[in-house]
Image 1 (cartoon, each protein chain N blue to C red):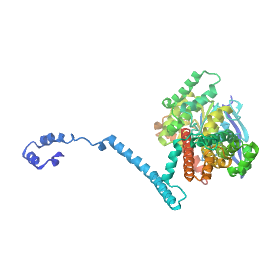
Image 2 (image 1 turned 90 degrees about the vertical axis):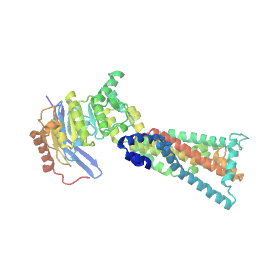
Image 3 (image 1 turned 120 degrees about the horizontal axis):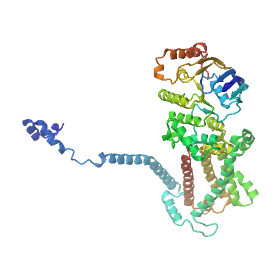
Image 4 (image 1 turned 90 degrees about the horizontal axis):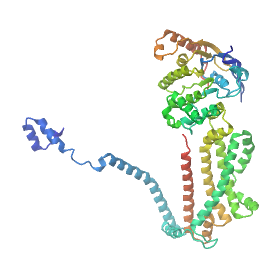
Length: 265
Length: 304
């Protein structure tokens, strides 16, 4: 049986004012259903570009991307995205932000009451039922990101794509949301592809870590299987030598083999 | 602590007595019975703070106005031709005591003049909004249209509003629609340009949300484009209404009819300088009110 998500020899070339810029080249990756993949690499290595290819927000210049044996053409709600900066619409309440997505995906098939129930359930899942009537400007950054996750999950996507979802949060909020995400993913058995630059986050959350080489013309350098048993507990893992072994392998890849030549930009 | 505050006589008693503690305790309740003065209570403090803030906020503008009036009085007393503040005030009181009289087309109350000007501004500005805002959306959304219209707008926008008046008179034949035309053509640009800028500056994230959700074009407009651009539109509207009010006085001076601009010119012909000064104040205050009113609307639609 072929894999759920298949990326075959994908490449991405941007046309810029200075000419062609090859961001990605020769990407081959298969993701199984229910798998949690972390994409890690230095900034500018094209990991977000790869995620946007799967999301369909960008069209690959080379190669093919398949989801459940169908070619990915353009974005769609079956590949919902949790954006780095939450991207909630500031003029809609948290409820309406989630409801907009629910309405789009299930609006044709379900009654209004069912749609509202779905929206409430999604907010409940991220523990924000009490903030349904608030506007995004009235809640904290962590809460906004949780609404973004609720919106993405409410669409019942085939693949959940997350672009550094916790990057802008403080360490404590981030840890809290990581724990919540692990519970939610375990409950919903979602297939997840997550971009991160946080080594601990990658090891804690994922089944496999895809490590990318530096751009331009970035590609997959190494894939590391994280065979830590689930459910995972961050406190127990802190003393687990195997966890530290995995962590150092990622660190070694990033800082010894793919040491950044210079700070770009 | 109270032992210190005791007077000498009591102090000796206290010292003589073996049970110092109880004496002190017995004397203690005498102090708190003093009624707290108003300004020491929480409410009193807040009241005092409020009064201080109001006074602090009023002093500079009041001082500014007082200086302005004083300067005006000095200039009036030196020049002799310009009426002073007191004289002008007296004329204003007479003028506003009967604002809505009507003795023929060339002699109507100040109220009618203001309302007529506001009416022209309303029509001209309303038409400009009806054309300018949708045009701004199109220019912002379609780069081709933007590039196509950019040179035309670039040339037409800096043209002095009154230069449009002869064209209006030629085409429309009458003074009334010609002055409305001048309002229209001069107040349309801020709305076109601000709306277009707002559409171009919609964060890509919002549009990505629309793309991932595959929202229909109508939903994209009502749920994302329109609310995102609304603050920019309102900025354009606010600038446009200022321009429209600025232009109406000049246009009416040239076209005549009932209106504040014509009234100014009429009073000039009558050599009634006090009324001209009153007209300047009226134009300023009405303009300020229009702008402040739109600021309130804009605040309602700000989401940051």
